[in-house]
Structure formats: structure tokens, C-alpha cells
Image (spheres, rainbow, N blue to C red):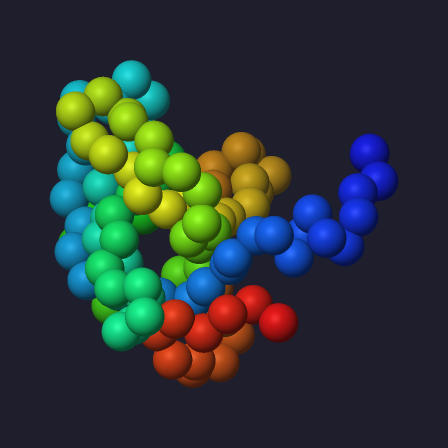
Length: 112
């Protein structure tokens, strides 16, 4: 593990949001789901390509609260522009488990 400074961590803008739309992403090289996440008035709805197909189906994601880095530069994923990085952790089999707030928080709430 490489140590880093608190300034590096503070440069990340990690926010909570609600998935408003999700659909399969068959064009992706690695299995993925396209998600649209509402981060509230300040940031709005942003989209992401999330490699979460082993544990989640698109229809089960709508309404889910997630956490994402919202200040990375957009990244082209095949024909889709991913605007945020939805966060998760690999389980013991390597499938991604979404990082979520434990209790209700407003869309756009910043990690403190």
C-alpha cells in the first residue's frame, strides 16, 4: 500500500445519488450496465457504465441509492460516455457489491 496525503483524498468529490434509469450495455467489452444517477440540483443526473452484472440486474437498480466519484473527467466506454465512477467492492468471488449509504441521505450528499 502506498501512503497518500489527505489532500489527495479531499480532491475526490464522492456523492450519494439515486439510480433513476438502468439498462443493459451489450456493446461493452466487459459485461456492464448503463446507469443514470440523480445527484440532486447542484450536479443533476449523470450516467455511468458499471461492471456490476454478476450481482445486479438493470430492473433491480432503479431507486437504489449509490455512491460515486463525480469529479473525474468523462470517459468513453464504447459508444457510451461515462460521466461518474459508481463505487463498489469485490466480494470473495470478485463480483462487485455497490457502496451505499447505510441510512437515507439526500441526493448530492457529499462524503464527509
